Length: 145
Image (tube, rainbow, N blue to C red; front, side):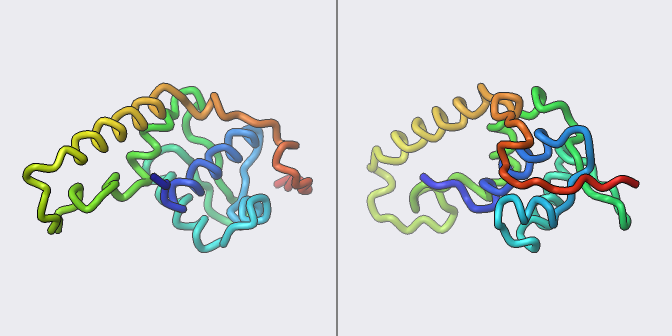
């Protein structure tokens, strides 16, 4: 199983925002830190803001910051918000055409594995992933308003 790039970037944005709690960060800065497309990050930040994980401040001196304490952000919940589905095989999809689905036992095994995966993520919060700002390897001049 592989997470979508969107979920991967979402976790990275949250981790960076958690490490920079004392200030607003920008999409441009985050793109530099991770060497990720600014356009992708705009979409990620938009979804995370609508979900209530980030607080965005508009304007020339704007940016974003965590809207919730890191210990309140469960990783499993973030995955449920950012993953479009958890269709691990064709039999999980609405347009399933697999001929053996009625008698196949694979779907049950994969469902059990998926439940274990999500249950593990539910045990952890963003607080468990906290890094120091220096861990991101980019020294930026902090803006002052």
